[in-house]
Image (cartoon, rainbow, N blue to C red):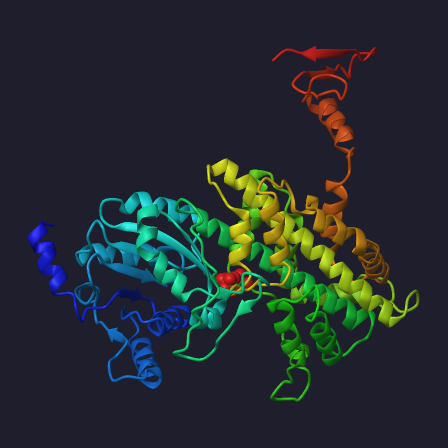
Length: 519
Ligand code: 6PG
């Protein structure tokens, strides 16, 4: 574009919108209103006219002046013509093909090379990498993973942006405005749930994560941790319900108490609310009428797959994915429950109810530390593999508010990485070493009692196995290497020789001689 036409365009820009928004589903609608609350005028488009009508009505209801903060567009071309140049367009459409579908329409509508398109869906990180390359020269494809659900999107989500650093300089202030805010001293969220009154103080929960793909990778791991955290809370509930015969309301009260201390988190808070809810139809506890088959959209699975691919032990996250899969075998489980025997589920024969509850609290806390340790370990290994410079203190910081896994102990994780940016594993941080030392005996007791009572706790016990394996100086992998050498001549290293030297025993020879294997 020539300098004169650029100037002409700038003079014509007043009255135009600051941001374009495509996709007005639950997340898109709420992010748009959040942008509007923060003073950005938004041009929006959705294929569904009802969604456009809904956001216009909401804007009319909430705005304090006559001027609309949201402008409805009927086509991609109209959206572009309503925007200040260079254009910034945010997408909130389902992950996968719909993202490319919209991108192609934007190309047809005349999007330009220095325009930015930001994908905020739960996209697979490798898709973001491919898209940046695919659309290079047509527009700048940038990714920003968003966590926080409906309320987060509306009043402050956690945002994980990644991609072209110059594009980041153009959108940084927008993301800082709409992101959740944290009190930097306490690490606690500063919240306002009032439309039109966004929080303007505190540290914003957004930071540039790295090259495109890195942001969605980090969000994927966030979701893996989310799966583990949710499953752990569900296992504690299951043990209280079946092993201690507690009512949902009693368990809700226990969670509320736990929410005052070390376990303070959004997921504990909402679990208490779910357990307290009565079924409007029958008056029974709602949880008792909700079908015990867990759904999943794939981000936990992607985390587990990535952990397996890069060889990062993330068994608690993986167990949480498997637990959802196993839950879906409802009719098979019902039939098996009639055929397969197990012990009496009552847990109060060895310890009092109060003691078991305390044990469960500590078990949940230690398991949660391990789940986060696994998530951060996975990000660290993946970062090396993909050449990303991830800043783990910053990642922990932006998860302190806005996102689904927000929890008070993310402040401790922030401090752990701030005091040692090369920390190999969260479990090795002095604070967490002490925490696990203090609480592990109850962790072990809770798992042992649940196991004896036949109540499954796959995530909790996998977390303990992770901890015990990680602190074990000699694992039985020595025997395993012997087995591999026996049947496949796969060779082994010796503890008393340089590791690079490989040996093989000629197992079929009567004298079984050992040979040093030449490379
Ligand atoms: C978030 C959530 C959000 C969504 C996930 C999980 O951070 O806001 O993680 O992205 O809840 O997609 O969905 P599933 O449990 O259905 O996999």
